[in-house]
Image (cartoon, rainbow, N blue to C red; front, side, top):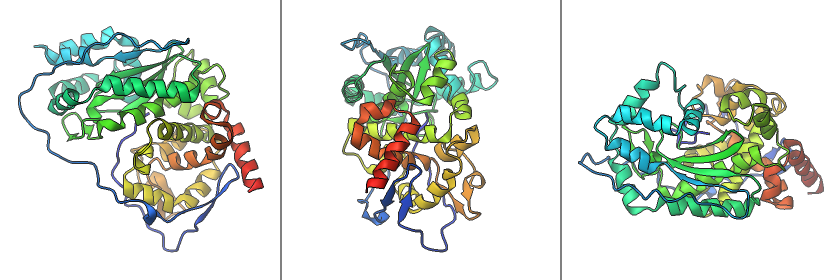
Length: 386
């Protein structure tokens, strides 16, 4: 799904101190360290994008990276094809041909993360994408071997998660929408990363977030965890059931409507935990896609967040996913108790805490395949023995 570095919601600050102990939906109790314990943080750079002529030196279209032993997986590098589009005299026409060439993958991406590729706004997005300045992307590709970064993350995930399903890793340029995400197409898991967001430079023409390229393995680890949960033959997750019922296809919108909130929370929490194991050493808030102050606010409001979502854990509905696990919802939609505005995607933090006991007891490979009920039961047992 989409992860960005959102602006910090101002919210409504509490008029009374919040408790420092949280009773989790899984049954655990945690004592919170003060937010001020976090190390200092320098926000991502906001350097101007250089407006200079450039030509791309396209990265080699490396042969598909085959995983051994079976099942197979592929590292799919769409960068050479996209960069060829930028060198075309008719960029818009070339982009349409590029999309058709990779139709099954790119139509799934557009439908889940952008707009319908046959809809009224499709051509507007394409034209804006083709008019953007990709100088920052060219500079990043000249100094960073993104294929090696992605391949190392893929292999690390296969080891950590005891891979038993095919998961392809895709390097691509999006259209300013998702910076990373997961798909399932015809039963095959896909984890992708859109590299215009990982140049280290915020670029308004591409809508690039300016994330550092060193974060690519973190995001890929997160998305590969989702793909394993959705497609592993050993997965007991409700997400796998929903994907199977849809004929082997994942839809962000339909699963949001049908999956209980508990499943959606642990799904994201597990992916956060996997990303920490795949790419350690980053600031804690980066694993959640938060800014530092947003992270501190989520921790401050954690008791309130847990209490608010507790009544909805076994309910399903698109609004619940958007409220707790998405960007873009209004302050009004995220207001609880009539006075507190929950930070965007606050459920990621709670979800990560909900699965900690299961990971500690059974490991990442088991936890990623466990049902939400199994994960919650371990949490309750761990709390009872504490």
